[in-house]
Amino acid sequence: MPRVRPWRRPAPLNVPEAAGAAEENRARPRWPAGREDRGRAARHRGDGLVAAYAVGGYAPYLVRWAASRGLTSGTVAAISFSFGALAAVWFSAGSRAGMITGAGLLYASFVLDCVDGGLARAAGTPGTAWPAGVLSRAKEAAVYAGLAAGAGAEPSGGPGLAGNAWAAAVAALALLTVRQTMDVAYATSRHGRRPRPPRIRNEVARRAVRALALPAGERFALIAVTAALAGARVTLTVLLVWGSAAAAFVLAGHARDSFARPGPAPGPADR
Image (cartoon, rainbow, N blue to C red; front, side, top):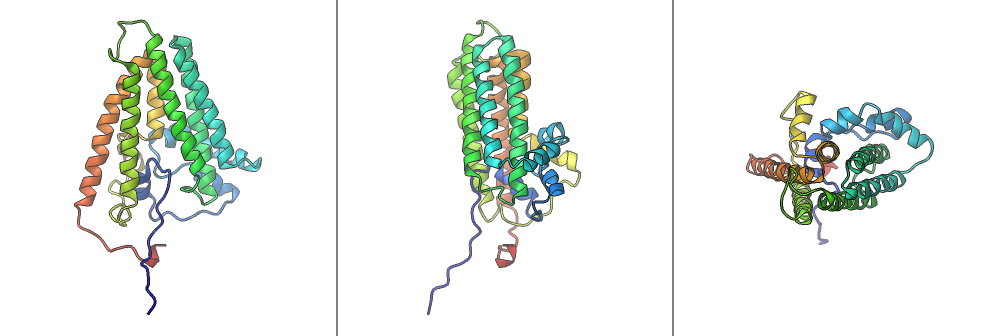
């Protein structure tokens, strides 16, 4: 008698905010890659406040413009990485002009990230563009390194952390990596795949709660605003404090869902 292997849902790759996206998009239909749908794909239900409202208002037009000119998700991701690398270079100068310029470049890089995500979702491949995920992680690591170099170039005695800025940058990046790993592990578990209705019906309130977990839009907005106004030391300090609180918030949410009453196991109908 042939051995029948149980069906398993494939695990999504390179999805930093995978747990939140899984909770909000289990019943999301797959849109065809038409012109109108490319615009709708720019605003993702799993986005936070910054991605949805600070960028989502005009991102659909950029997605349509990029799609009409044949730009792929990978091409936009490479351009976004270039903007992020330039922002890291300007941050490393440690001057006020460098911080302001770096903040503007980082904001432009995040806008391109939203366009990249919109193109990928419109094409029906949101979780398979692993080069874009690698470039995004490398860009954020470069930005943290630029902030550490900029903190060393700032005059001593200013506000913010008083210790080693490089150690603070590595700690903030490690904290983010651990939290994202927890998100992906949860999203691919049976608890993360369990169908549940959204707990908060109001869209703005739901995105505000998601913003507490410091998704990509809130992280980049935090870096851009604090770097332009207060410098690299304050930026690294706030990243460490908010990142620690966000990791605890996400871990508590995963633990609560894991101990909740289990629902029906996913089957072929969930494909």
